[in-house]
Length: 400
Ligand code: ATP
Ligand code: MG
Image: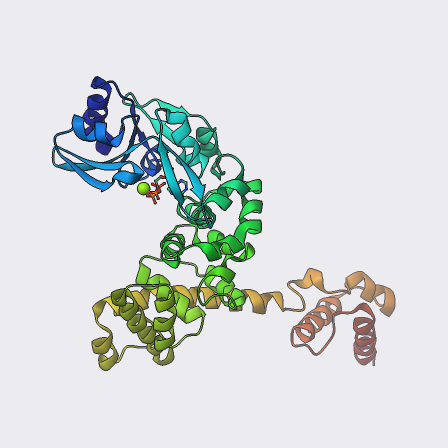
């Protein structure tokens, strides 16, 4: 058991001593099972908020109408949420009514994906009602219940599917992905701030390329500010070969691939409701990136104007851009070659002997090398009849 869970165990014990159930739930359990570092621990309990407050000496109300109370235990804050069901989803957004319940299973049922819908008790035993462990094992993101219904209840889950794919490098189960594709337009109902959070988590995930490709395939970009017309450019961004390490790097790259000026990037980020601080820094980094690519070196003035962080970020991004550019160019040039090896030449030694009625000898190798070179220089077409005609001339010459 992770140290973070160890420290929190007494909290679960206190619930139990008072006659309530309490479990670790959500991302921390998932990440612990994946041996990933865990973020904040979430606790779910059968105790109602007032009961939670009466059990613990120090609590803070953070969202009591949603059932969440922060419990301070040994100076550590723990988010404790009462088991609840949700109803009355209006406009494909968050529910406007939550009902507290005593059943763990009811609580887990409202959660988005099976890998986010199991609970762990004090002994480390996992309560898993939706085959979440199996999906975790198989590295699959699957909606709890009917994916269409779940995305209609809260369309943000569409983005969450993609961002978990990016963070975990999992596949999205087929029907769940089908529902992502068919529910894409519901994203237009979701507050841009919420989409923003998931979008950036997607960009920073280790499987960004895969996730962004699905984001494009499902046409989610059409419902994101300023991206509706940018399918091809986003596809190029999906080919960026390095992990993106910060939000500023993500926006800078987006600006670069969308071919925006610094000022245009700031406009875009305004639509996404980005903070002024991050916009400013992204603009600075984008300008540094353009300068760096144009001049292929740093001038004192550019270093000075950019500041240390933008210089570091720029250098990192440039290294990725170069790699992707060179690889792409090399791949393209290579695939354009008329032949890749001697075996691809459409005439061979046997053909030459047959048509010349000459004895085999050095002349065959010399003629084939001549043909090889001329094909590569585009002076000869790699076509049997063309090569035959050329060879006849060649043999006539040496026979003379
Ligand atoms: P992270 O590591 O990013 O915090 P997480 O899984 O903990 O991942 P949170 O957004 O912190 O994600 O949410 C905690 C848990 O609450 C999730 O694991 C999931 O069970 C549930 N949850 C969060 N958002 C939704 C949603 N929109 N619909 C259904 N369940 C959700
Ligand atoms: Mg979390």
